[in-house]
Length: 227
Length: 406
Ligand SMILES: Nc1ncnc2c1ncn2[C@@H]1O[C@H](COP(=O)(O)OP(=O)(O)OP(=O)(O)O)[C@@H](O)[C@H]1O
Ligand SMILES: [Mg+2]
Image (cartoon, rainbow over all chains, first blue to last red; front, side, top):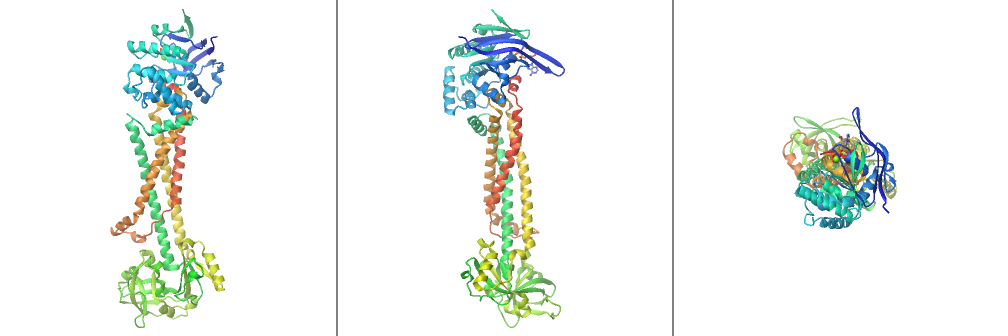
């Protein structure tokens, strides 16, 4: 019944900087099932963001392969990979996440417009989402005029606007104070559950991790499931 | 389908809201600069075309006509309406002409002497000159002449005074002797180059000095719309009068003048193209600046699934819209100022600037739409090429760049 959404097959990622070679991920096998929420923790610099970037089609593994709904991501060209990200993945990052010159509403609309939605439809969907996260009176605000927590809520709406299969969140509460971060945690996990989406998230926050169905530790270049 | 996003983004780039005052200012400044490049180009074009047409008109109407039929006797009397033979014809005048030297006490002037009837100065020709005095009016037995004010000034003579002239003979057998003439009028065509070498004489007098078998001809003017049908017009005349005429057309006489015009025009258009190239480079720098300022946003758009072509189109369209606005504004302003060029030239003429006497300062405004369109079109083509080239930068922005900058 649980469908396989994302699979890492012996993924290795090395960064070459000058003479030295840095192995970040090595022979990593990992399966993400549809409808689950997975948290990844690990030391700083252990390669968590690198793993998410590969999962979201932003980066490519040095060896091994990644498949999404049975489709090999390595086989996609630039254009198809862009379309894949647009339709199947919703990103929520720690910071630098919104377009500064655009309103909250426009920020949420962008992925839908890229998909080719009509502007009226995109706006309608974006308004629904913003309403749901309690920002219906902030539609025309620019990111600079929003609090950190509000910005993150806008980012969550943007990640959901195209109803993607997978939400990838990289330390979504990393730059927030305790109070707003607990709000975002609940929101993110609840909304993902309600919409029946899959969540792949990096977090140092044990509280947030505990809301997920599975928690992994990224250690020694590979993932270990925690009880 | 994804064109929708490009169009939306392009619109947003063109109407930057909120904090991006600088971006807005940059768009206005860019459009203004393009307009400032276009204004002088349009003005130069209007000036050049107006002056060339004006000068050509003067040579045709006062010096050579459109067609010269080399027949020694008059074909029509001066009252005859030639448009009855061919509606494309406007007038026909019997002319006797040759070369001579005019003397005053102090100096001389070499001139072309044109013997014409007073009817020669018809409505058409009167648009090209002004005169004072009574042209070619006979008093006594002396020849009546009309000098240009330019020659009169040079010789230091006025209306009512006399000048001596000597005909330059066609063959060595002729006897050369100076004769006197009455200056009955002075004319001014507004074009110094023409005035300084053209003298009108009463035709009856001219016939005494120039043998009509070599120097007489009939000068035809045709309407403006038919200056390219000269051969056909002669053919109609020949069949109507059942005769063959040896003839010459105006461009054969003023071949060098005409050719010079065409060459200068080509050179000027070439210079325009180089200016447009520089403008194109400027336009591409607008695109570069816009991209430079929004590297972060471009990386984020890419993360969210925008393709290189989506983004390139968006930036391309905004830059081209700015260019087009500047272009339209520049051309319109250029045309507006150009239509007032007469005022400008009049003022320049009165300023006493040296060298202006070689230019025609009073001419009909000619707007060559074809050239203005060609210049505008070239501007758009050149800019679109340079902008496209500078948009390659978008391709090199990786979506990861946004995540790495903390
Ligand atoms: N483009 C790159 N080129 C070279 N090295 C890189 C690159 N990206 C990441 N790295 C290195 O890979 C390692 C893992 O980086 P990554 O960002 O995945 O760590 P992380 O687990 O997300 O850390 P943090 O918890 O601090 O965000 C780091 O040592 C980093 O310096
Ligand atoms: Mg990280």
